[in-house]
Length: 406
Image (tube, rainbow, N blue to C red; front, side, top):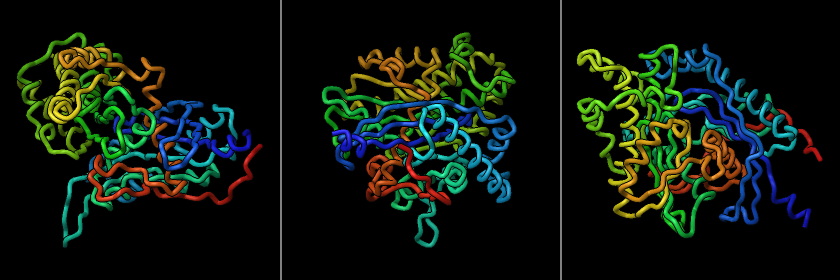
């Protein structure tokens, strides 16, 4: 029995740096599976830590979000630099977990998105929609001597998908409930929701980006409350009141009524969008705290509107489970609970059920990498819009592979 158990257990590292560019989330998970490819899978988090980016790295990443600044030499340098930083984060979390690098089956690294253009763009009958994540897998693999999976999104896009959202695949594996319809809302830079109907099959799952998560809030805080980069705990938003005129303008963005599948990013809700809000604030002499309160409410509204528009007509949910950095914003959570109360949907955080809001996406990319290494499809086509299931991720092999430790 012990030998069978050992054969079914693997250790995998997941690395994630999101649209907020706060730093690198690193997780080590233990994956236990009875039948690979079926849903008889269990995941246990062994260790997690977040490593903030050095300020000069964060600033240079933000420069690359503007395509005019993202010259080949700058992108190439940052691709290698992030590979080094991701490798350091992987080795640090492996040490913290008490394991040796030789015991790790794979590393899954999402990379840092610097450009995401998922909408169809045809040239000579070829769909040239694209996405760019940097942080080179070969660097990570050769610094750690561990096979590394990166660049997950492009395989889905090659099959006509949007390359996002990807986490719903792992949420289906880990959260499907026999009795309840569950909504899993991640609030990072962008908000994304996964709908898991009770007793769901993979074909029942759907997901999409709800709109801005922390991105607009963080952008405004950085401009209006320098040197702060985020509204810690939602304390600034709690001091303000909602500006109806601004909220009405924000709600008019066409993204909120687009048909599914859909995804979005900094290209829509980034620096240029924040600049428009600040220009309106100055023209109308609005208080900065009121602008933050309104932007915070917008994020909550976009999630509730998504439920009413796309989900409730098909599935009445019992629970909304919040993860990501937004789960620590008390004002945002209060807004969500108020908006979902009429629907009798319970709003909880990952911590409320014994989970870890920060670790959730790093765990997801570790699990996605596990499936890649097993040669198993790891997207959900009806979620991303892909025409078929695919094995996502590019595998970088190290220069040598140490013998597995005992």
